[in-house]
Length: 155
Ligand code: CUA
Image 1: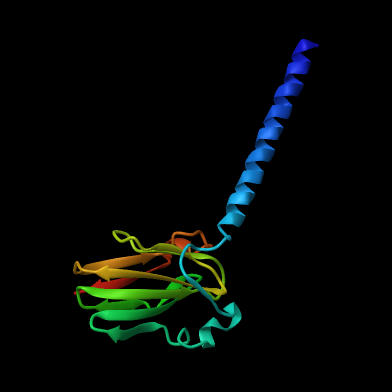
Image 2: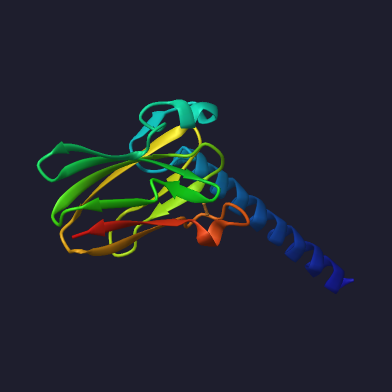
């Protein structure tokens, strides 16, 4: 009899703890706005491929060693597939997705954000060191997730 009562109490404590955890999780998620922490603009995800400048993804020189990179992240790849800039260049990335949520990470830099359909995520990095930089999707997006990558060549 005693055992049953303790079991009930522990069950209730367990359920209560779980409920509290879920509530906190939701509050956190909504406080964050369920959105990437980067500055965002909106875009119609159905029309990404025909909306300038995302209809022709690529680099646009906007200053001395400064570029805007308009990119799309899609299942399963990035466009453009290859970019090249001189060492010391600053790239302002503007990335959107026509389909599902993707990740955008460049190892060895502080670039790491989510790409949501309907949003344009932006981030900036200055590439001082020459080399080949990998851009990876770090958000599981389906069967081809592992092969979703592209490169930036800094020379
Ligand atoms: Cu795109 Cu994982």
